[in-house]
Length: 233
Image 1 (tube, rainbow, N blue to C red):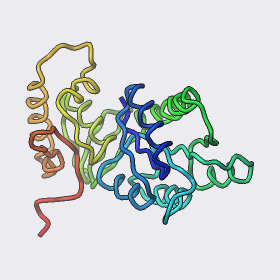
Image 2: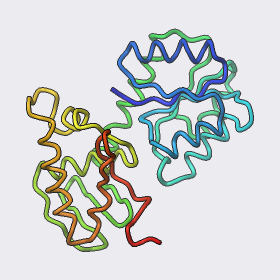
Image 3: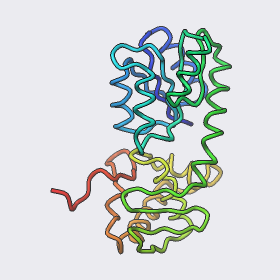
């Protein structure tokens, strides 16, 4: 399941898209303006943004450029939706940073196929690339984790857990979601097992004083954050 931010100011289109995405198994976050889209991304990173070109206030092009200009969101998949199907409009959308472009009206099957294609293209890039957040570095190819040059020793499960959290920062993940994405949905183990491995992960990060980055969200699950350090006033 992917979390998709739908940015569309026409209620009928937004509802139609949301219904079909939910039916296909996606989690949908609908917003109706560019400003609301930026705020939603700041709160929690989606897996993909469906972004209408013509929006009240901040345009879809401006939103795309803003997201591409930030380190945290520069690789966020974006598909632009617009009633303008001419070549100049397509080029403008792609130049603004969109991964793909769909002209209205479009079929549900085409939309879902485009989403699958963009997510597939992004997935290998995300899984293989080194990740760096607030001094915490993880290199998949060498299975090395360090913080500001200090090497940290993690077990295989803790490495996989940290890798997933670092590639989905600031997002809250329930225990069942972590079991599904880190352990695999074919593994039948208790959800409390996640707590044990989170504890071990924090212990592994403790020598670098960055265990605080693995945050417990009461009643919801866990997330990796870089926003609030206990050293800050």
